[in-house]
Image (tube, rainbow, N blue to C red; front, top):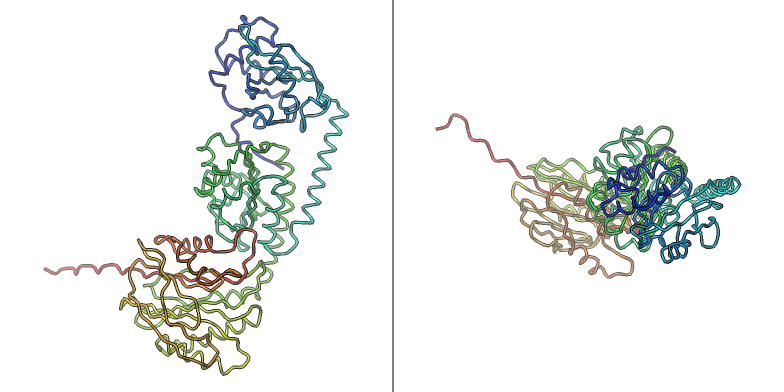
Length: 600
């Protein structure tokens, strides 16, 4: 597994406050007196300590790690981000804190062997001789020098490698059982995220390219991803609510750590130094705010590649409560990502192979007619649960003369093939009846009569909204459906009061219509009950939750639908209890006529 470090190297240039400690350490390790090394150049002192073949690290009087050279990192298996800036009790040297404090107290050297009761813990190899020497200047102890005096015991090192191999094998065996249990992309993404937390990270997201999108590693800038998985440790869940949820679209802005991983085609390790670098690493401002709130200190981003194609992206994050990601993590998670990518790719191929059947179902659900140019539309459909089986939710648009467009939202009772067939019959019948250019309430009356004559047809709710921008008017009629919502600048979301008749197919009739002024800048939102209803909750409470939303009133309608689904859709990790269909419409302003040329 190839990877890149983007953590600023070995911890950055020491501050002026560290120069005294570096000077004293250089003098102590050279065997000279405290007055023989008087350089104030921290870079020179750093080069001196880095050049030592012996592993050396420094702690201040508060037992906070100030410095470690490359030999120390190699001998102990610790990355600089695991130590630098951290107090010793929060690192692998927690068990050695007693020894460190005694060195500070009496100023005497001590030597210990790793693996003992007062030595450092994993991943430091067992059998290393470590010397703890007081760091003294002008007769005052200002810290501790930690020096590794020899290489690990070869036998112990071999045991350590065997332990690593067993850990990796056990992880991959567990992953094989829990990831890729179905040929559903969203399920596989959710399984990968859930497996990574808390085993490997405190936060995990899985973003997948749509099945009809192909990209080679290094060639996926600016692509829209589908969020397929999100998992967070319990302590972080209140802080990550702003993250895109499964089912929503995600783009990774240029310069983010994810974009760098996509551009290079390899895993990227990053330990952000400060809020500014953390914000630059995030794919968007919402994610940056969530990272900052959660206290993210380390990121590992891996492209998901299978059969030479990019299929997605895995992002893992840790906080200060866990050690930062290191090269070993990149290798281990890389093996897991490769296996998960194969499962995701199999799900993508299965989705494509379903071809005719799924295309037919999608066509029945989301193929509204073309509106006039004076109306902007956006629609979305989410099936219940994680399966691709459609239910009875549907929407339609019918283009009528004189710049008018009829918007339709309906919900056939039940799910499965029977509901889909009835849905198709309703749509076909509605198109025929709407072609007679009847007012909305008479369209419902005709539909009710035709459907009631078919004893096998299921009842359905239906809402009609006739947009007439030329006359500046909406006309509504309803058959047992939930009220539409109107979103306008400077006003709360309004649920329109519309006379409601019985569902279609009952043969009772009795439908009425009402009109409302069509105003520029207003957006009409039609939806099915799956968007707002909750099991065991009164419908008035559900509708009040929709009315309390502050949805975007400008910009693309797709952004408005994303915001509504994010706020009211199923929570992360919980399948939708019912189908959700939404349709948004906004009148387009007609440009002012050009002045006649040549007129006086």
